[in-house]
Length: 93
Image 1: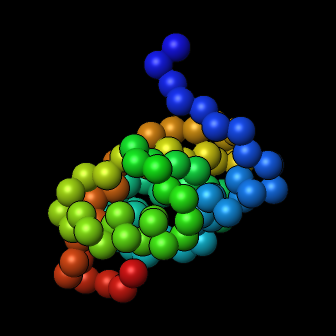
Image 2: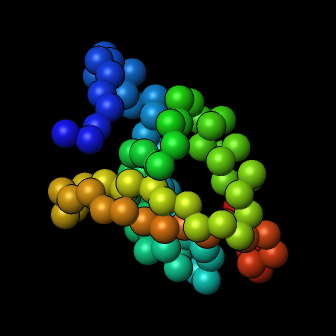
């Protein structure tokens, strides 16, 4: 089937989900199409085991397009989002 799976307790799955709370104007997140409050980052092309893995991935790949899987609670759909983190884009975060 072309997949890898692992059994996990549903309560632990919430430790690997990032809720998008704010998207600043003209930011890499806005250009990627992230939507505050309704988007949840649920995965990436690499295994993210904890909160620090997410931030480390972003920090170690400035200027590189990274693929994330994002679930939107309003549409009930998951989509691929390409996010290119860049230093000096004019804002914070």
